[in-house]
Length: 194
Image 1 (cartoon, rainbow, N blue to C red):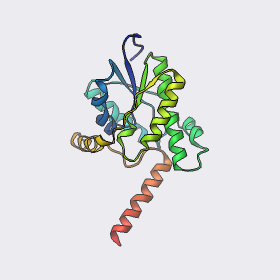
Image 2: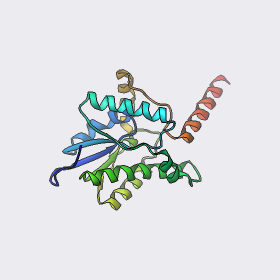
Image 3: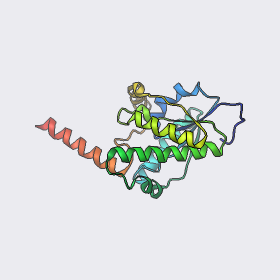
Image 4: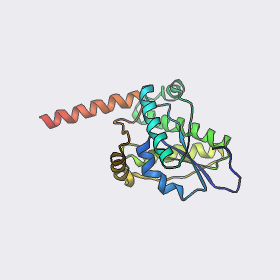
């Protein structure tokens, strides 16, 4: 943790959860001299879920010698950032931006030159929108955005997290995604029963 010399390439890697991290970390670790995982996820609801995901991420990082930092949990700030969204896409875009801003602020403060995210490992996320938000926030902060689409590593992340017994959530994180995921699961069950 802490600042890096200006000659050393350093990556602040936003991570949403342990399964996504284990699907991405190895691929990115070789691209930077220093990688610090940044848990900036004020979107996660409820607080107990935030703690479960954080603890799983801390456990995986600690077991594998991965540098890790947790940013303050500020769900009110997250809600302010996404509260005006008219639909799911706008809400997700605002959420990506809010988490990138927190990661970028930490990166600048600590002398890192690049940001990236584990979010693109999930086929349920909008990789193109993530790239747009990441590039824009990085540019505004004077950083580089490492744009990678890791959806091809999703099944690896899923199977490895199962093998390792790492907690896996069944919704993205926010209260709206929790409700949407529940409705979608119930609809699938109803279809199977019919």
